[in-house]
Length: 611
View: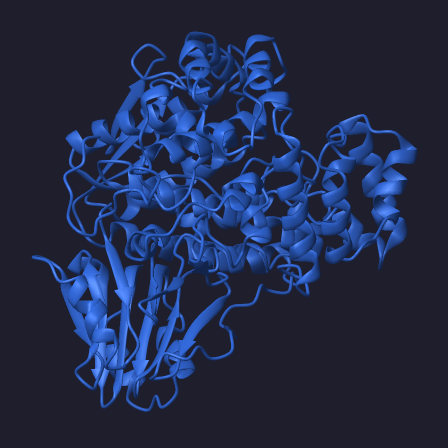
């Protein structure tokens, strides 16, 4: 996706920056004063704009916005923050950009699928929807400290680096906040435009909210007409999206690739779903017809704003989008985010323990048996009720310890990160400093409840990923309806105790889609494993992975020990031990993609890419 935009303040000095961006095909939107406000290249079908008096508003992305409605809503707007009222109730995933009397308002999405970044160019404050565009304009260098944090597993960059990017001097606006500028470009105080919901609804109430939000989200995907495509893995998340899309799309193409694990029954469930979707076109790919995980990773060069762990899947995703593109798809739907939204994290039991200890203990006893965790470790995990700041400080001191056991390791604010075995002492120091700095900067969790904080953290990691994938993959864009803000809000509104029912898998999603997805498909109670695919890809492409350790740029930056990494790639480690590998590969490929040590090639100015 080659879309980009740069936002400028309503000041005379901004004209010079706008002139630097002038190219054929570059669009320009002005403040009421006539000075340049937005400059860039974006799909006109993704824009809905309106103006009234000195107010200007642009909604960029996938939305239900209508120009006439926006115009009526902004007629009485006098302050930038009031522009947010104009988009109340809209479905989709979009940026909101407003200029009111020369003052500016800009925000992305709470899920981080769309972000706002800032820097200064020749003393002029500028903002953009892509950090690499600002890095190219300001000639920024990569930030080694941010790269060190990205090496951690499980990932924590979305929270620890909420206002940082992977470029020096390019800052990020936290997803829940809006950027506000005075006419001269002075930045106003951060304004929180989104807050997580209180988990207070019953299952029935929340299911009605999710049904509406998810239906509307998929509706924004199909509203443009034509052909759309969707993953049909066989899992409940992707299956649900396929049935929703089939109701509205002119034509639906589904894709299923068969896993190699004989215990993976996704293929059987996908076949049942296909039988219930006779009007759709179905593509089924065997392991031999689709690229392996890690295929081609050694030669990947992916210009993007930040590293992406999905380099493992890049060849497979590229092949998938090529195939659906040949069938006319203009947008591809994926079920990413469904697990995070509809599977409450065990840390909700720690929240419960503070108010209903006996109920919490009964539920913990059941979970303890399922996870085979000891009484003492579970008791310690539940009774250790720390603040989020304390959690960050503890995590900073635990980076080189063995990973916590499965169940007790999920009772904190979020899964505690660990440095990979190949991280250098210097990298560990950078990781530690980042966590401690986050703790010192008046650290607040994403939500008061641990379970909501943890879900949002996971969703934002996914939001960052899909944003980067859309910057690098050729073919139709990918959409994750489960990460649309309205869907996130609806799903997190349920009381966690009602979203967990013994013997039922994702009861909230099942209740929400009842009558849309056939009951026999909603009855599925598990998901398929893909360990066999991981190890198959690792064996076949170990040579490519080892080649990346030669002349490693991460090693040159002092972040990894390539000898230890090579040993990890050679021995038969468990999947969990190799999980950090994906983040390391993403960082290495990203560094190799940079042009002569500077910012990666970006859509400004227009370039010809070979992919």
